Image (cartoon, rainbow, N blue to C red; front, side, top):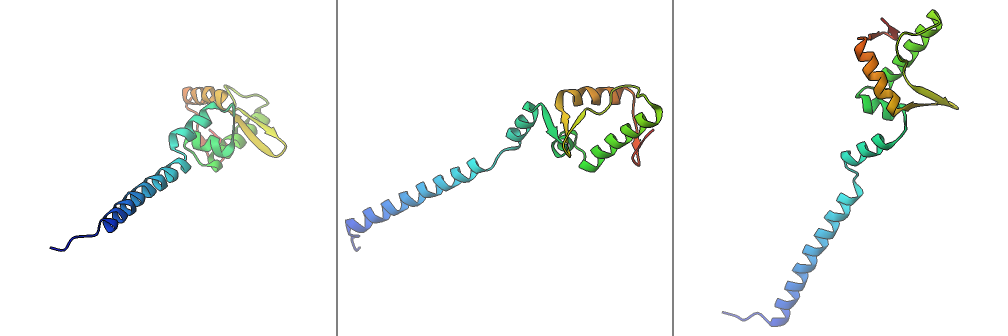
Length: 124
């Protein structure tokens, strides 16, 4: 059996260890760059105001559905001059709508209690 020179054995060991450490560092760096869903939910739950996109995600709806609810309630208020219950809690800053997270939770409870229906952009 031929003997392997000690320098080749040491070089191979160093190369193997370097390869393993490099792979570990890369995998840790990739996982640190990807925000987790839990972290995103914590950010949304800490915000007082949410965008329409964030509101839609929070409610598990589309942005179009959220906007349809807002339009339907505004139309109902305009026609009747009043509104029974709690209206969708938004504010408008310049051209962008923001929704109060705390008031949104109260609106959901109120809308659920009264079994509101929003069909084809109208409240029924």
